[in-house]
Amino acid sequence: MTEIKSVVNAKEFQRALEKVLKAAPKKSRLAFLQETHICFAGDTCTLTCTDLELWCQVVIPAQGGQCSFILNDSRKLLSVCKYFSGDMEFSYQENDPPETFPSKEDLDGSLTLRCGSKELHQRVSATGLFPVMPALEPKHVYTVDPASLSKRFERIKYALSNDASRLCDQCVQFFDNRIGAVDGYRLALSRDDSLCVDEPFFIPPAAMKLLPAFEGEECRLSVGKRHAVFDSGSVRVITCMPSGKGLNFDSAIPKEHTEEHTVNITDFSDSLRYLEQFIFNRDREAVRLDGGVLSIKNIKGEYSSKLELAETPKMVIGFKAYYMLDGLKQFRAKKLDTIAIGNPPLLLPS
Image 1 (cartoon, helix red, strand yellow):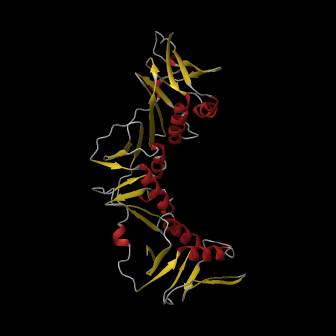
Image 2 (cartoon, one colour):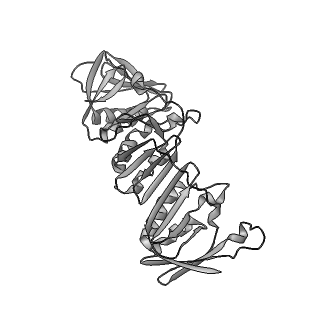
Image 3 (tube, one colour):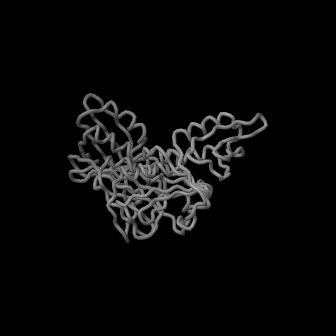
């Protein structure tokens, strides 16, 4: 057996392992998909996880020989990493291949981890079992601020569909200088001129949730036919993209309003939360807005809260309270005090 030793900083390894494991399923019939692939090459250590639809890869500095393997019980290793600090030494031994055609067990190896006074020994799997990362031929490449894009995603994600038959609506749609989400009942948009795309594409929410892994680094967003890649050099996120066409947002948004009224967001939210206390079935009991008064009526009684408006609106509309509260969070996150509510029903920055 050949023994190969490599050294990394324990805390850097812990942070990298925590990031990539967010792309690994916690349960899978393919056990290796729950694990992390480790590759030492030259002065780097590359950690990779995937569920075959989403990939996350992090590169950290390292010293030592070249080797690669698949960890055994990656999440347990992450939990014990908190007890490690300083240099962490990996000592890997691969079993010698047999004369006959090798089986999985024949090519397994062993790993010894040493950090200070602590040491552990584990079996590891052959690197050949791990899926090959997809190659990307980008049609378009954009410069992206992951922190800003992540905040925009957090503001609109409430409107994503959970309908498995509508794959595009389960994803965030990128088009011109906007990103959008729609579930058939709600539509949410975020606009930012710093990112303007050439043609629409769709990014699954699982990939958007990994944007904090870039920790404020600027990255490139490369978009191909089937895959998109966020890449900062030290962190890479690859995601499959659904094909097809999503909603034409501009055709769905009303262009004209018969009336429009400015509403204080805090007062509006407080009124809705008050009325929510009397709602027993939030999907069946709608809040009514009539003459500037919010109200609900059910078998238990009638409840209302009057909004402070400059003019009494003529509009009469009904909506689910929690739908509206989700929408109001989008504007509160931007630290706005007021919004304009129009007829047909539409919330706009005032």
